[in-house]
Length: 175
Image 1 (cartoon, rainbow, N blue to C red):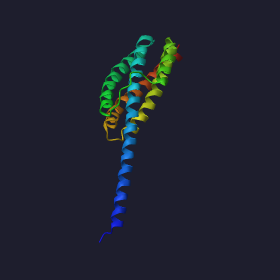
Image 2 (image 1 turned 60 degrees about the horizontal axis):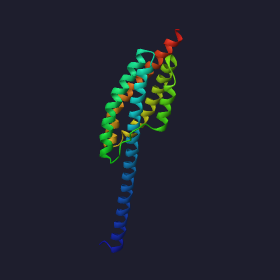
Image 3 (image 1 turned 90 degrees about the horizontal axis):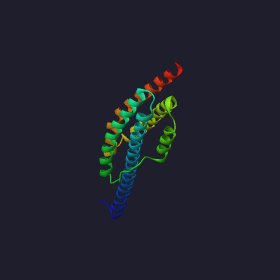
Image 4 (image 1 turned 180 degrees about the horizontal axis):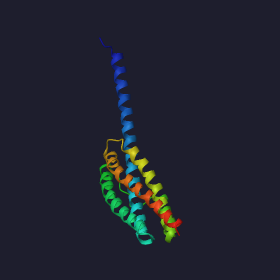
């Protein structure tokens, strides 16, 4: 026979478990909302830097990489904005302060210096993005699913950026 005290204790324990689960869900939701905002800001930054590379790049490889960024990150931004809406997030309309700083640094460069700095920046940026997307991809919500779908493209960009960095460095050393 279950006593009133035992039933009360069980009810209290169940309430605490439910409260803890709700708090974890809210944190996960908050983390996913933060991720999706950063993803959209990153897409905006990549499109902007990609356009800059097409304008200022000295080598055709830099210009082609820039075009790939504009295309791929433009498409990804549209998908990320859909996920943001699902998560109740107003999509940001600009890149982050750090991304704007990178753009400003690249904008004042030209020629071979632009190409080298751009390639190096793209390697670092895509390495950082892959870490964030891998972390998010473990989640089962819409942001996690988008992260899973995006990882192969980010890895392709990283490989291309690493190749570009070597190519630009070789071009400089042969002069």
